Amino acid sequence: MFKTLISTCILALIFPICISAQDINQVVAQVKKKIELVSDYEASGKMKTNVAFLKIPIANVKMYFKRPNKLKLKSEKGVSFIPKGAMSLNMNNLFVESNYTIIDAGTEKMGNTLVRIARLLPNDDNNEIVLSTLYIDPINLVIVKSKTTTRESGTYELEMTYKGYIKYGLPDKILFSFNTKDYKLPKGITFDFDDGSSTKKASTDLKNKKGQAEISITSYIINKGISDVLFN
Image (cartoon, rainbow, N blue to C red; front, side, top):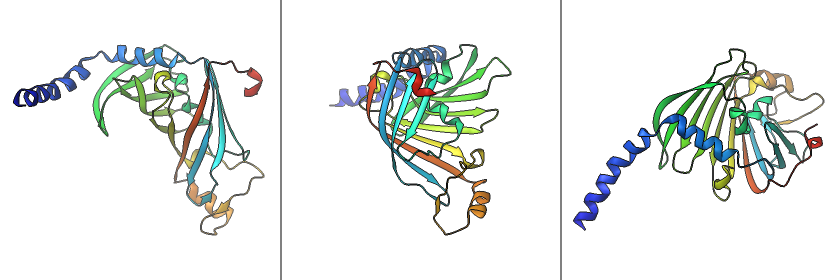
């Protein structure tokens, strides 16, 4: 038992060092390779939206993806309170262009997972994405968290958990956080407000608030082919 304890202690000391020793470019390349296993998918699930003052019911949603960067999120309600930065829900968007510099930003403990942090800086000064920070599980080669800063659409954060579809790098749950000031209420759409405040007052208050959308995926149909018409 003493030998087992010693071995466990040694592994506990060595494992973080081994993780940190991996070249960050290779780690990102492996994650990209895994993501590229998926040419297209149709995902079904439920979306819960949490935005200050707004009462938005939980909705059944469909999410469609087609390589290289087509993504569409459809709600049964016809409206999804997500700004155009929702395209960052598609991790493929981060890797469409290979012209970027990867910076090793070290490691961080997220729950029980020691993740590698990679910062992707586009070499093109005119790129819409200014900076992407990826928090990578180096064992399962999946992105568990990302922060994307864009020129026009603000900063967006994603947190992802994986279960049944981890071998494809597809999450079972996505938590999407955004600044509500970067989103305008659709014309002709009326929402119920939690505190009875007017649309004008609530719209003003939204400017300094954070919004979140939680998407729980129940199933994926992967690599079965999707028509481009779906994305029109």
